[in-house]
Image: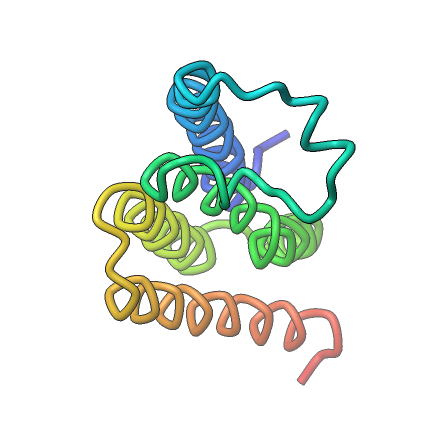
Length: 144
């Protein structure tokens, strides 16, 4: 059985999400320790958040980690749909790799310099690529 190539970028984005998880905690835990923060105190006071306490560059990684659980969920689903229909190689896989590349660059920008307009452009481009994959899946599934 040949594995659909479109599953490779899907797994790559999953792995990248775990890289961001590691980066988030590698910066967040030392920052929490430096702030002498008792995590349980945050749970008792819903008006306080880590955004209020920790330096913004520390939180940028956490924000990006959260973002990797938003639109990419559609990416994973569309990759599975395309793979299940036997159309997961060639252009489909190439477009999926473009999506992953844009999301990785978006992560790096958000987690380091956090320039909003650069992030917006990268997010918009990745969204257009995702729309193209969804359109392709719709054409396959609905036969138009």
